[in-house]
Amino acid sequence: MSFDPATLTRIANLARIDLPAAHLSALGDEMGAVLTLIDQLQAVETNGIVPLSHPLSVIGEMALPLRADVVSAENLRPSSFANAPQTENGLFLVPKVIE
Amino acid sequence: MNAPDQPAPGIAALSKQLQTKQITAVKLAEQSLQRITDHVSLNAFLHVEPDLTMAEARAADARIAAGDTSPLLGIPLAHKDIFVTRGWRTTAGSKMLADYISPFDATVVENMRAAGLVCVGKLNCDEFAMGSANENSAFGAVKNPWDNGRIPGGSSGGSAAAVAAGLVPASTGTDTGGSLRQPAAMCGITAIKPTYGRVSRYGMVAFASSLDQGGPMARSAEDCAFLLDAMAGHDPRDSTSLDSAETKLSILRAFQDKSAAKSAPDKEFAGLRIGLPTEFFAGGLAKDVAARVAEAVDVFKQHGATIVDISLPRTQLAIPAYYVIAPAEASSNLSRFDGVRYGHRASEYKDLNDMIAKSRAEGFGREVQRRILTGTYVLSHGYYDAYYLQAQRVRRLIAQDFQDALKQCDLIMGPVAPSTAWKIGEKSSDPVAVYLEDIFTLGVSLAGLPGMSVPCGFDALHLPVGLQIIGNYFAEAEMLSVAHQYQQLTDWHLRTPASAAARTT
Image (cartoon, rainbow over all chains, first blue to last red; front, top):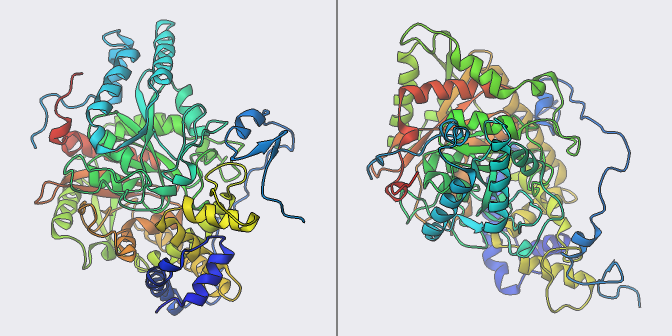
């Protein structure tokens, strides 16, 4: 099984990763090997089996605990902004998106 | 490779020395920092901040002086660099977060500090915890203290190597598909991955949210009992953190009660039914690993346990199911790294989209990119049903297999990994070959069950072998107690590599 360059480029675009053209061939081979591995699932008979997303729900209904909808977080603006690549006047700066 | 004259004292012994003023938390922290410096070539630590550490150590000494007898007070600890820490860098082993300093502490970090543990540093790991060899760290591979040419396992490789080399008595790690158990096995230490939801994921850099679970790594099961008790508990800030009758009970007290229960001599495990899954002992298992695990099981048998043959028929299918579900969740979780609010931003770009795509191409390493791409593919239009939902259906079958097996036995035992530590670089060109090494740990993660690794001997190259102990949901205290009693009958957990022998304590 292999992963053709067109599919790889499409998926990379969805994933917002700018793959260098030089990597496409080797990465396509590696992805092909992963695809061969996960394709083993296709042979499993799973008619009527409900997908399991929370592991413990296999022993019973899981109700995830909820907390009251109240403001509990402290103001972390200064330390949060310290990690930002570019800020101005308390705003995160990104390249211009509207002409 | 002889055992040192003085094996590293366990947490209970260190605590006694601290409480009786034979040593101070400041002195223990200084010794730990010195050993970290002496073993810098292991590449186990990514960040040390001696000023922050010594402030915590002085605070611990002040609490001891004021009469606080908390059992972990003053004990040095290091965190896997996946737990965010205020004031310390947190990189998750990625170039993406090379300069990131979290505005808040992970709940695990808060809990351990409240218990009085002194943080001496942050530990190397595979990038975003994706790997089984610690070779995927953007900051270089970690070396196995038993053989510096070999991997320590992963993704909590720094955490395992640091404890094995005696740099710290305890560390934290995380396990998504085996990342606590497998490095513990390969470095000859003890670790426990708790039931999914026992330990808060708040502030644990997310990889696969339905699988990720934090846990302790230390020399012995008893040490792990102390550590897990402090680490676990309901956290309202994590909606998957369990809040039930089981999670309200003290793990430590249950462990101590079970361990203290009187038994006839040589019948410590009377009444314990141990299930051995046929599939865990089939082809592909290294001969020495099979032999060491069989010898360990024999110890339990000789001391009263009943051995039951069980079957986990979908053991092999855990690999493809995991390598769909984990990448799918990772592709979603890692979409937050866009170079806007934090993390790496490319220096040259055309527009916003290009900035995001170039930042992610530069910031993420190859394995992480591959998993994001795999996850994006299996979640994309036309493939969601065939891969993602199908993997979740297989996940239910695997979880049900464990429930069926646990009707016939109390605990399941087997190897942690098919082989011992491999050479650095040996498998790095074949990612799928590395995935296959996770065969015995992935099912437990998919089922959300607790799993342990306990040292049970060495192979012909004197590399450690780990025994895996799997219990039902919330069986941590029982597993730790059984492992503790095994460690009273054996001394594999006390063996240390030659590099750890020069101990001053």
